[in-house]
Length: 242
Length: 48
Image 1 (cartoon, each protein chain N blue to C red):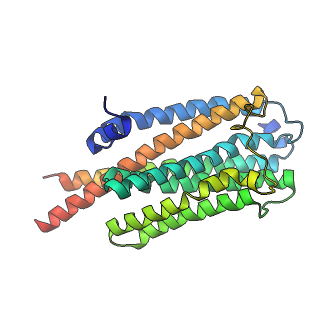
Image 2: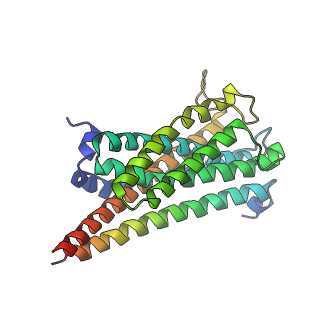
Image 3: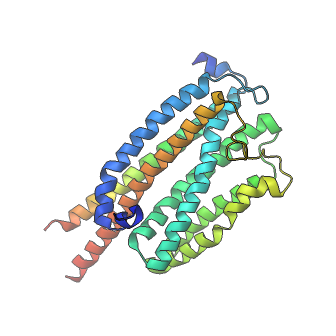
């Protein structure tokens, strides 16, 4: 039995797998999001947040995905640095724009929730600042890759940047415990179980799964695109030499 | 629909969902366009 990462490390096997897995994950994401949104909009108002609790169903999954994608970027970068594997580098390159988009969503939806609840669009709070730093690292990663003509050098430099940026993940997670923060603590992953009733918990979990499936689908599509690009450029080079 | 537009804090809730929808559409559009574009390019270059 070959472990899943090793099985998919072969580009041909990956292409065969992603051909059916990407649309499957996409359909799964749409189904889960449909049910999650329905339950989210039919849930009662929260006694403290009122109607703004509905923003949580898109804000929390976006923030979770922003961090999860960064962890994927870090692992792919590490594998790319150690094994110089094309697929690992393509996976890292494909994850960065998606991670930046989810982080942007977490920041914007958080701001739109914060204005009515906290009375401000933005506050220099440890959680908010550490997520903003992650967004800037995503942008720096993409800028670094785009700025060097030598793709191998760009991949190596960007992978090192991604690994350095991994330090930020525990800072984001524990920022609400380490410092005095306006941002509430973890309501899902905490001792004693989630701190919310099922009427909010179920749509939130469905939306989290929908975001995860959407990322899975988009990541596979982007890795496929990246592999096609590399193959096209190699074919162009071969044609030029012939 | 009218209930959505008139709910309390609709001016914050609807833009949050709107921005999310736009970003998702962008991610889907760009990802599919990128993949299809390079697949076509590779296939064109591979033709004898």
